[in-house]
Image (cartoon, rainbow, N blue to C red; front, side, top):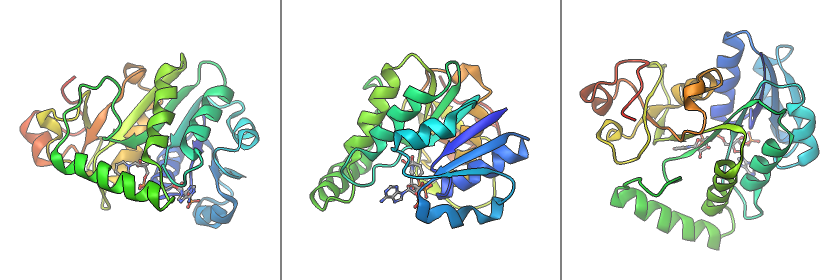
Length: 234
Ligand SMILES: NC(=O)c1ccc[n+]([C@@H]2O[C@H](COP(=O)([O-])OP(=O)(O)OC[C@H]3O[C@@H](n4cnc5c(N)ncnc54)[C@H](OP(=O)(O)O)[C@@H]3O)[C@@H](O)[C@H]2O)c1
């Protein structure tokens, strides 16, 4: 199994690299040129293709021959970085490859998610401020996901809750909709977010799903039947 990790140098990306290597996968990582050093711990064990993740030539080269592509979608900048990244992956990943994208709970596919006032306020205030100051465009991540949803590739969009560092607790549980009681704790270890992304490559039940995830040991997961590794309500 050969997988490409787009955004490999970030915190989520590096955890994904480790999980993929643990599974014996051959790994190709894409990251910005200035961040290549952040992957030194994996030197000799992975192939690094340096470059912007929305550079179509970089992605074309990196995903060649891959069975899976794990792409970190981030809303940084106001020049369509996220949608450019997603589009390049959709266009150049080999036909039939499993594509797994990351984003946050704020992304909705069918409008059936129920958000807390806190999340709505954050998206509104942070989103407007960030666009005004031109350092981030939350809607870019939204547009990237809309393009993924519309594609006929074998995609999964994993929606992360608030994240924290710490030892792995196991595979997060998930639900189709934010607002479901199992997700109430709104906390996932970043290492386990990465685990869910990597496991999704070989889980065909997640194709064309937008799982919203939460840590399997959080109070809401435990209260609503989410044993370690189990799936949440669907
Ligand atoms: N943080 C949270 O609480 C949270 C919550 C829910 C979901 N998520 C989702 O989780 C995923 C990972 O997020 P994370 O917060 O944990 O961050 P992360 O894994 O550290 O990833 C950040 C990524 O953004 C890149 N990046 C940083 N600044 C950039 C810029 N100006 N232009 C282009 N790329 C830039 C980084 O590349 P370099 O290594 O080159 O800097 C890295 O690949 C994202 O999809 C996010 O939407 C995060």
